[in-house]
Length: 253
Image (cartoon, rainbow, N blue to C red; front, side):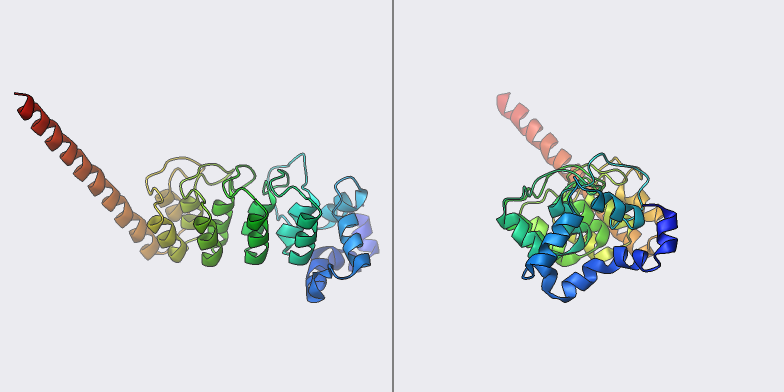
């Protein structure tokens, strides 16, 4: 399927981009056996339907890197927010921790799409909240980039590592939130123990990500205050350690 097909069939681009919205409008399609079967045929990585769809429209968005495995049917139903089909796939034994697709896993894809219902389904089925891989490195970083507070709280509540490293562009959830200029999410991550001084990724650290992203002055000030508090804690701990060492030495004498 090539560009000439898009010209020859004007409805093709619309159908490729918006079919999932029409499916969700009729309760996700899981109660319709024929529609359910058609969805799985489209998302089958062993058939041409999937590659043809992705040539016309890629729901992952625009990326500068390619992946060998486009993703499983569960990956795409999670990315598209098709909760009923996702539930049916899980019941049929789909591997919730299978890796593949540009977001690396079904959970990361659902987190990037802000779909709380699908995230809960995946977590309840045993999805690893800290599974590494994909563009964002992990589900929490994907959620931080999207900026959905409820999703981030859900992931943190199920054991997501707030300082987990990884990803193509960012190296932490805090960096992702800083670039997106999301003050609410930044506060949430800092309160959960995010390391404001963590180094890594394309931007180096959260403060530099905020500056490059032209974040609001209040966001930058929030990170500066957190950095100052972190340094104060280190200085206090160092002072206590030195005092303890002196006391121990005096006791020995």
